[in-house]
Image (cartoon, rainbow, N blue to C red; front, side, top):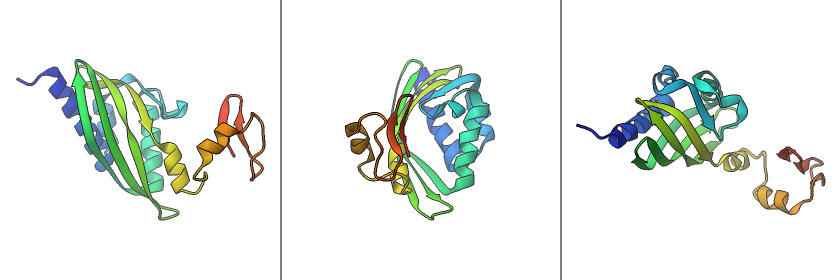
Length: 163
């Protein structure tokens, strides 16, 4: 008999394989509870499978060749922590994007209830040319509401790195 930890690890591997490698949107409903929460992806993608599917569609509409590689995974009880890399090609620029990071998930009865995501979206924005290589350092050294070289503002209350 498989332990709960083993079953939960299998779920995470299956999630990344079916949702990202196979592009199967319906798998989200099978593995994610209706009231689930995905932290760290933006408020518009946070609540439940329907909002998470908006992110899934956005990625598959704007990128091709998506591939997720789970590199490390560990579990204790109902929690699973994974680290991995997602690669894809941006359709309009042709640039290959690499998204490194991971997530810490809570699983109940074989479904994801909550996930805390930590993915390098700044790195992707740099790869796309939206942000400069040293954007984080530049933003941290600026005072609130100080214009940057492009005329935008690096930090404003409630919103950082808006250009």
